[in-house]
Length: 293
Image (cartoon, rainbow, N blue to C red; front, side):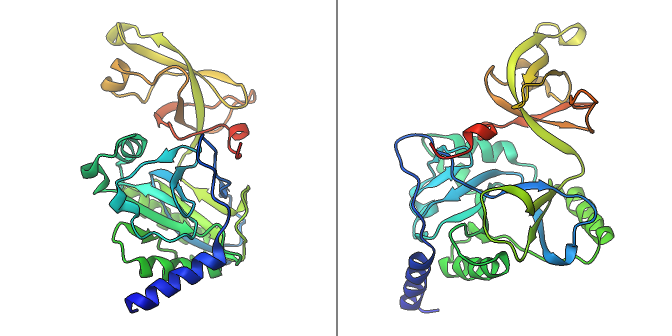
């Protein structure tokens, strides 16, 4: 495509898919499609499958980058130079197993140019496009190709034939260091709800909780963190005592911050079974804070 043709293409997309941008001047969470959990019985022929990237959800509103929680992201100017007015939904990703790098880079008020050089914006949807995902997928691929920015990538999507094939694919990507898979229903419109239009599949369950207090350690952990007392958005309280590195026990997540934990099912009380600390989640907002203010 010629330079003139590319500008015309982007202008057409901008005119067709523009939606109101989030007002600057305070945190305001974008209205994004949220993922439900995969369960056997879904009609897999209706879905596209992609890798679940272990990064920070990013939303380009046509002018600025935002996190899912409504915090402004401040990348170097070159990172978003030439991006279209078309809103894009994706993941700010630094590679498999590098969540801490991605999270730390995205949170910086003053961008670290060297850190951003290893970041990618993995685009998986166009929220303002009026079509179903099959159509948005094609438009997304064309848009990203026209941008010609190596750090802006259209997420590869493929079909899968059966639950068994899906499980084999899950095992393969997890073995390679990925977090899991995402399934996106091809005939679905973009809606800012959680349901079966978009589902996630991982080899473990996880959820978020807020840190209430630091409990002192005993034995070999004497003098440093023993466990975190945490509370879920629903108000359930419990302790996280495992999953921490020595560095995290010396410098635990601050009281009031959100963390992600893994677990294996729920007790009758609703509390998680075998809960272990996974990582901090500075970009997380509880459901009641996930709508624009």
